[in-house]
Length: 267
Figure 1 (cartoon, one colour):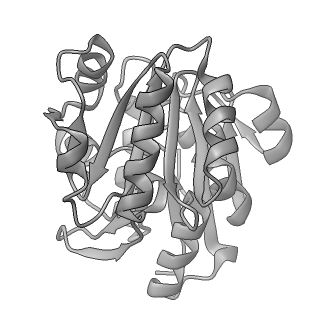
Figure 2 (tube, rainbow, N blue to C red; figure 1 turned 180 degrees about the horizontal axis):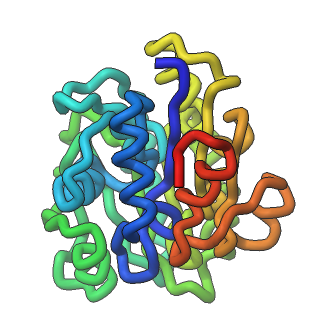
């Protein structure tokens, strides 16, 4: 292996109908035939990523929870960086105390734990990721051995203000926005860029041979650490300006066309 390609999922690998388009899948299969790893790097849980791989018959390593967990093609954990459980539970208690307009989720390995499975925001997320959540209590959360991520599904009009308030109270964690209504909270050492660096070290692949695609703020570290980082055309303008390289949007095979331009794949 002397090259590797990384991709975010929602808004990048998947189109607006949550599907991999024909040319993008063709590009992934060509990478596979050339033994160039295609690694999905997502804020999703392992099951939320594996459902995509299974649907499109794609095999490979995945980076889940924006870098907190790396699982190889045999489903073995090769890297994990979880939050301090007590610290994470204190964040949940704060969210409850403030009565924010959101629904919180906690992820531990491949468990998806929520306050209320019947919340419409949770049900909508289940429909997107094709995974079922489990109802829990704060006392039960305290008994977990690891918490890899907290997700806040917010009222889109209040996401930024909620994020700023959480940041003002909790400094020892990574807090990032992954869409207009999603706030991701992980250990302070976790982001997509550090996970990519870790995997490249394990596989002895130089960062000069890396390519990545993304569309949101939680993709920035990933897009900046690789040699060729591409923002999708559907990414916010601020992200496009920071990344410099921009490909077509997620509905028009941006991944395929960028790899074609780099001569990694053929037409």
